[in-house]
Image (tube, rainbow, N blue to C red; front, side, top):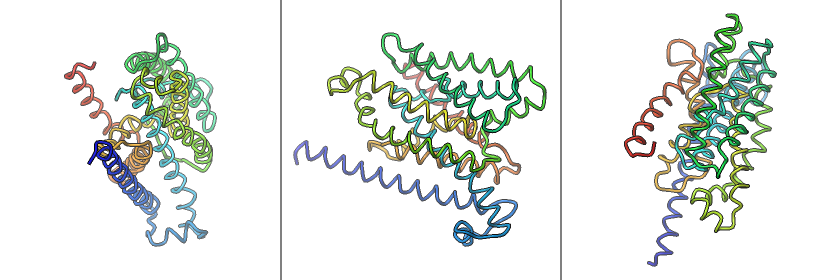
Length: 340
């Protein structure tokens, strides 16, 4: 067998494994999604869900379609958005630390949301709009500060950490200064929460993903080239800086819309792609496994937070408890390897 045939066979095996992992993740998402609709203070038999979702009436239909379904749908969409954003950042910058909740993008959303809540008494869609604008402004600021001489992974991470620290200090000051009721409202949002999510949260996020996800997939060829290095990518005919800016814009926008919908749910973007890559193994993982992993992490985290801890907690508490040890492990291993 020639070398070309060996490579082709390895690619086919990798593609089969990636598809298998994606299907298994999808099955897990459907299972947790169904449990999220059925389990609660008003339990609903799993067998009744199809009828209720297809036009049932009564109290059970209201609980499922108006209370639990928007919450679960928001969780899936937010997880997909965070998973895709984290994968784009980490692969584009070739840095496992480069996720929106580490490099300052979600801190920008948090600062803007807290300003809206504490200084202007805003709530609902106004807070979401402020968070969206804050994330976009923070992303643009980080890029402009890091772009001199070309954007490199660790430079952007360091600039982002610095910008995030400044924005976190703004949040801390406002939380200290604010009246207790406003501070409590801001704290709930900052934790990352799916409580009270309605179709008003689902529709704008779904519309944004309908545009941003195809854009991310269309840029996947450029992403693969940029992962080889700027010189190699340029040799392949890519417009390096233009492609990088387009990918960064899509990644920031995905994180911005997800944060606007559910708050800065900690570490979902950070862990989704590494988990997906481990599941796929040596195969070349596309964006789909990372998207599905992000959705599963959010859904499963919310289910655990609501039903398995004895008291109901925001989903960000669970994802933070899982993600923080991974961050510490990554920093420790990277330091031993001399990469930090």
